[in-house]
Image 1 (cartoon, rainbow, N blue to C red):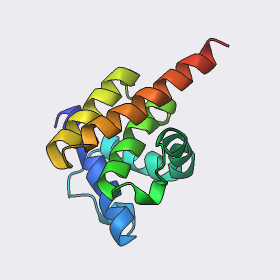
Image 2 (cartoon, rainbow, N blue to C red):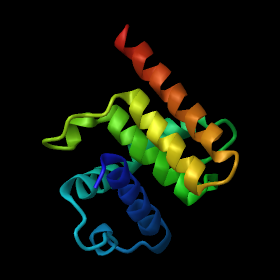
Image 3 (tube, rainbow, N blue to C red):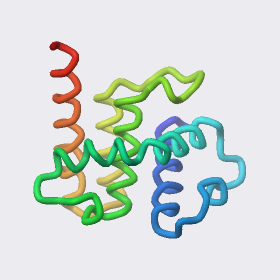
Amino acid sequence: MRRSEQRRAAVFALYQHDLTKRPLDDLFESGTGPFTRALAHATSDFADELDAHIERHARNWTIDRIAPLERAILRTALLEMTHPELIEGERPIPPEGAIDEAVETAKAFCGAEAPGFVNGILAAVLRELRGAQTR
């Protein structure tokens, strides 16, 4: 399974977890690989931190107002952007790659305005992170 498909599987598990409150491990399809599981669990574990990034850049939107699938997409991309070391044994994706994959997922599965919304928030977080690195 391609890495982008594994990321998408993590997003959908997180989406279902958000809606149903069932444990993540109950939501993975049989044969789900370790990358998908690690990404979903790390994203869930760091949700509060990731949500703080989202709320800081989502003008006039609280985290609860963002559609659950878009929220899962944003959180997953942000986890890879801010904590690439959490996915053991895997070569991290560059932040721009995480943004691109998130936007493509939003294009395929969300409403017409979602890709721009996702791109705007992730790009703003990336600018913030890079600005913090130069200080």
